[in-house]
Length: 100
Length: 218
Image (cartoon, rainbow over all chains, first blue to last red; front, side, top):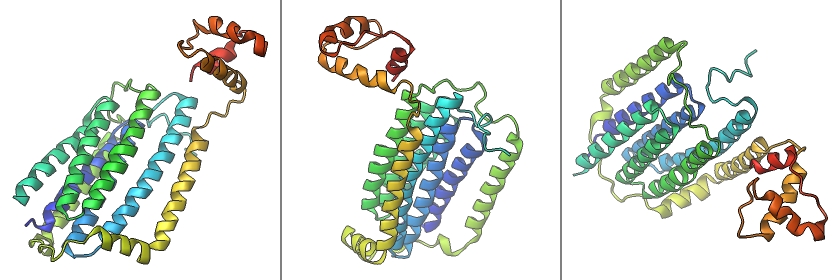
């Protein structure tokens, strides 16, 4: 049997890795992939707590997280394709169209 | 035995997750992320959620990452900038990441309740129970999620659609020529050979203007 904290530590490490990727990388694609990593670490947390407390709601919320992630990736990549067609760059420093 | 499996999977997941962030090529990042997702799916089986493991493989590895690889390869975005990381404000971002890591580690190691062993499941929750809970108690969020997926589908199509109307008609005119000569690949070099073949029934001149090259780009 594994203590619950092992899973939580693993999820924390993956979350911090993903946060570092979101904050530090220049490529928008890799920023999106790091976002996926963060969402997956949250899923690990949900399933670990659901397993520890013998509750199905962890799995159900994880299913919703996965569904919303699929929608988010589709929209994000659509925006990326449209952006690439107009600006021909993938670096986050150059994508400041919304800046006031 | 479970501990060894956990340690193996967690090590590989952490390593490949680290590789996602530091890899230079986006293709390498995507493949490392696929490896990480497979490890996480195996961890889901350890956590007594085999259905979620299958969903993880199907949705993340099968759909999301293939979409990423499609975008990377079709748009030819592999040339990465010389500096991988943001030069301006990198120190602030690094400090924020470090604070986040220290905070999470401290909070996790201080909380004493989390360190007791997880009780073995009396009976592991079956897919049957999961579906009953999903479709009885959580039916409304389920339907809302389906609406969100539909909206995202339509939105992604509208966002990624090319709204240049100028080269729409030559692109449509090229398709019958490609279908009628199946053995040939319609490259710009072979286009003057293909188009006169169906000249009598369409009466169209082979146009080599900018509209043709615009249509051939896709």
